[in-house]
Image (cartoon, rainbow, N blue to C red; front, side):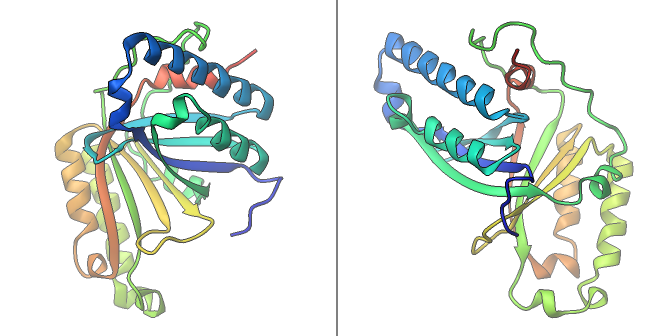
Length: 245
């Protein structure tokens, strides 16, 4: 999938802070954080950031603690964002995995939603003023990174059980009140995933039912997937980053 200047780019970012961050004094942490936020907001203004969402993993995986969706109208904006994010002094203490993607069939997957999440209302305060950040506990988010196993794509949809799988997952959506379903296709496939999925549900029971459905046979045997549970991270604050005068 080629990158172009006329199509928006979604940066998928697996990030976190290195243990060395905790060795800094409180004053250094505040200073470095403020310098970082000021720089990132400047990039957001210049390159017209159109989306900023964070998710905090319920169970961090080594230095990976949060997952982000960061969208710009051009590749240039995405590149400048990454460069700024890794800039010192703050950048010396971060863990970074970046992937370029585009959203996959948004209208199709939006139609699966049976209990839409309430719209996020951006904070009215200046985003340069960093608030106490928080975890949104009104829902749970399944982060899924997946692709077909080698050879599965050459099988027929009938052999893979595609139709049965869609029917099952849609029934889970209806029963458990699916709040959100989004898919993102990587520009450059990775060895064990080439699509990322954001699945928002109201409860842990619903998330468990979704995961069980993903693994159901026969379709489940033809896909490889890595799944993490997360919650939305200060959504009203980060929404305010794209509402800049």
